Each structure stands twice: as C-alpha cells, then as structure tokens.
Image 1 (cartoon, helix red, strand yellow):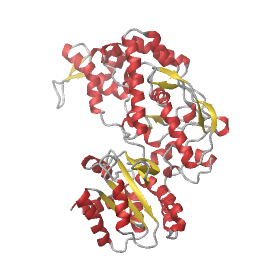
Image 2: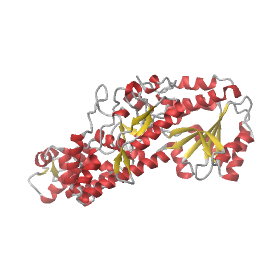
Image 3: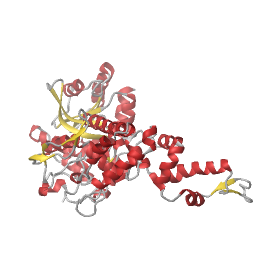
Image 4: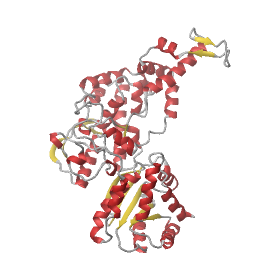
Length: 482
C-alpha cells in the first residue's frame, strides 16, 4: 500500500511532490548527492551544507590520523529503512549499512591513499575510490547525513496534506554541524503500521549513481593502462600485420585484465593513485549531473501509473467558474501543473508568504530545469522560482490581477509568473497588459486559460519525456519581449 492510499490523499504520484512509496517495501531508487546540489531552495542549501561539512569532517580526521574520530563519524550510519528506498527484497529489512559495513568503510577510508593525497574531493567520488561503497551504500550515507532536512520536509508535507503524525518518535542519527557529532532527538513523524516514515522529494532520487565504477574501469583505467603498456612496449603489445591498420600497436583488454586483475574497483583505486589525471578526466566528462527522473521512470520504479492527463485536465475544466469553487479550482490546478511542469519545476509550495507575510502567492515552484524552456529562462532572466496565481473568475481577468502577481515578483525571488484563469476572451488586449508590465518593470507574466491548459496537456503527451521546451509558454514569452 502506497502513502497516498494509506492516508487517502486523493492524488497519484504525478501530482505529488514526494515519492509515493510503498509503506512496507523498498523501491530501487537512490538519493543522489549531486541532484541535491542543483536545488536552489532552503531545503537544498541545508542539505548541501550538511553533506559538505560531514565529508570534510571525515576527510580531516583521516588526514590528521584521528582514526577514532573517523570511526565515530562513520559508526552511526545505518540503513534508513524509513525512506523505503534501496535494494531490500520484500519488506524493508536493513540489507545495507550497518555496524559491520560501517567498520569496513572506516578501514577503507583510513587506508586510502586518495584521501591522504587529496585526490578524493567529493562524496560521490567514493563510489569509484572507496572499497565497500556502492550506489546503495552511498544513498544510505546521503540519507543519514540529510536526515534533519528530510524530517523537516516530511513534517511540512504532513501539514500540507493533513497526514497524521505521532509525537516523540526517535529521529535516528542527525548530523550536528556545530558539534561535529551525531545527535538523536524526539520528533513528530508519520508512523504507518507502527513504522516511522520519512518522505523524500522525487526530484533528488535517481535510478543509479552519477559515477559508475565499471564504466570508469573499462573506459578510463584500462585505456590508461593500454597507453602505459604501449609506452613501455611491453609483451602485451601486438603489432597488427594486415588490414587497414597494419603496423598499428594494439593491446587487448583481456590481456590487461589478466595482468592487472578482475576486481574492477581494486584496480581502479590502485591505478587512480598512480594516475590521478584519469579521475580528473572522468569527472570532467561527467560534470553534468544525471537529469531528474521522468514520470515514466518513476512509474516503472515504483510500479504505479503514469499521469492520467485526461482526468487531471477534466478536474480543472469541469468546475464551474466562481468563488464557490475557488479552493477546488486551485487544488485541481495544482494537481495538473505539478504533473505538467515536473521535473523542470519542483517542490511546489502553496500560499507562500511574501513581503513579510503581508501578501501571498497561490503556488511557488523551485526552478530545477537542466534543459528546455525553464532552463533557458533561468539562464537569461531571473527565475530561481516560478509563481502561479489561480483565478476561477466567471469573467475575464483585468489589470488588477496582472498587477497582483507583478507585485509578488522581484529580482531576488524571480521575475516570471503565470496567471491561470478560465477564459481569455480578448487575447490581444491581455497581451498588451502583460507587455506593459514587461516594458516598465522587466517582469514577465504569461496568462493561461482552459484552452491553453489543454494545449499544454497535448504537448505533454507528444513531447514528454524527450524534451521540456513547452512551445506554448515559449511562444507567449516571446510575445512579451518582441
């Protein structure tokens, strides 16, 4: 049974900002540290600070020979079954991090030449260079380190969706940056079927780690060893005697594996110590983090359904205009646009206070785009956040509604907003209103009605997950600046 089913949320995964996991079983998905670094939000900043601080504390302890401190830092790591992510079969059962594994990792860190020479710089590098750390173990480590923000995130989701929580639930180990130790507190968390639950933003999980030791070994380490053998003109070098490459020197990978060993990670660790430039080359060529998972990828991983676009759109368009349905309209819009704009816009927040709480924005998204329209928007204009106002009016909106969202935009928060209404009768006049704001204040506002939402849905059917260009939004934005 999924979180949405157990708590009867009335929403499916495409319209939820968190992973709608099974409350008993694990999904084969993993927290990704580099995905977290892309989040331009308070949650993301807090997580980044914790990850960097923890890792630097660990590295400093190893470099200075304080092995006891390094052991203390690592020994509190446990498999976080409360997220229901990982490789456990059936019910979450603690197959990952534990005392034995933590001790093995501690020894690997203490014996690592890469740590002492500074080759190992980032937490993600450990997948390549620290024995005992694989994608699932790294995910468990990341989850432990950012447990504090995940608890706060879970509490905020529970408040928003009216999910009941229990008091005085053990937090599990929480990293304390001031004291450089693990703390345990008692917090409020949901406890379905007597097992505590931590919710995870779907934007920060991936199917695999960004770095892959097998790829690193086969396409970087072995290629470097091949060059080394050629330079030494060793007995592994063969000179081709025929064909178009006659006279060319060749070293077969099977011979390299026979000489240097089959244990990919052990060979990668040893050879990286000798040839650190190989790691630099690999990281440079893998500088772009893996994109956020698409609706289809999440559906496949969790075993649930992809977006039902017809139902999401109908929930909006079937409502009668007017104040009576204002809250239902905003909720239906939220369900639809979370699905439409994910994974370029993430972590929706409703009724966001601005101007010291004097004003509010119906819906605020964090711009997480790495490609497409919203990436271009963030690169060329100020758009760390994107604001949405919902107007279920029976008549066409006018200047006051445009001015309302314009007052909520700023260089610090973002200069792009969307107003969603029922019908734009005079599109030319509406465009003139928005162009005036764009010219005078450099604030860019796009107005969408029911017909536009239907077109966005059609774009989603055709284009997702290949690209996130949002041609309709791009067209409307172009009209504001030309």
